[in-house]
Image 1 (cartoon, helix red, strand yellow):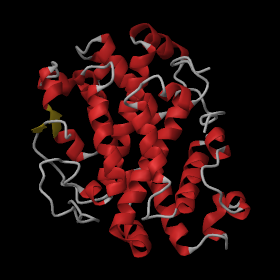
Image 2 (tube, rainbow over the protein chains, first blue to last red):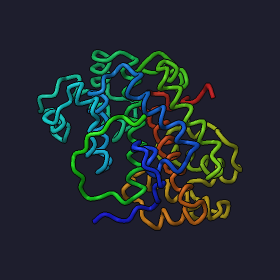
Image 3 (cartoon, each protein chain N blue to C red):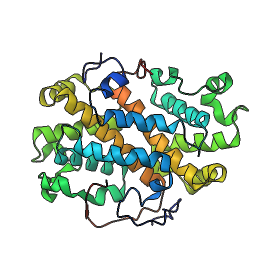
Image 4 (cartoon, chains in turn green, orange):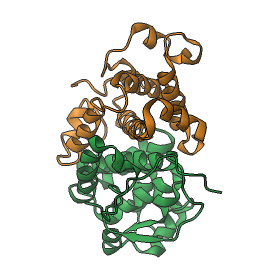
Length: 171
Length: 151
């Protein structure tokens, strides 16, 4: 059963899921989170579907119910439909995901489970498939969403389950 | 040299992703000026994360000066007289956060809130997420010995 939230969210309903969450009570960081969040989606070389694969894999690994339930509309528009989302789970290597999509998951798992330089084979696969800028973008995508989801879990009050919820990128 | 892109330190790699890397660095820099939690307390938490991740470079980095006794006894903080109650509350939460954020208990959170309030708890959790991210990035990029040379 879900516990109580450890922090009260602000009394605002701006429609911005970051501003209206508990993160919104620290104005000094909110001023940085909002433009960083938008930049993660808009300013890097990976497309929204690729970002969403890494985000959802992180959500599964951290066990963030909220993060797992969310679907970003721009990722769906970029081709990440629900049948593909279902392949991001444990048996992803045997799934119909493309080799590039599987490498996104493999890199995410490396970051989360064994932070260190990847083994030579994975390193070569990543370097063959992605540009240096794409790998840097993927790194910061995982770092950003991992910190975000850990914070969400630690703040408590997470329900045991949530329905799939489509949202736009908060800006 | 990192395997992921040309560059010897975190700053050099972040600079290659303008718009994102600089904003990530901007968030990190802002953490050292938060009014909710003392920067020296956050530095102790960052250093403890560096120890837990075995990141020598992040351990050697000094973002904020802390007393030499605290640095030398950080691994033994539960038994050391050099850490006060607010620092202990933050370090206890840091250690659990590093392993599994879902394992943080109400007692951990209440201890931090007792000293820094709800806003302090949120600020600390945000800081831990960014610190953990910076350390992991250095390790995955292969910068473990020199993650922050240019700072």
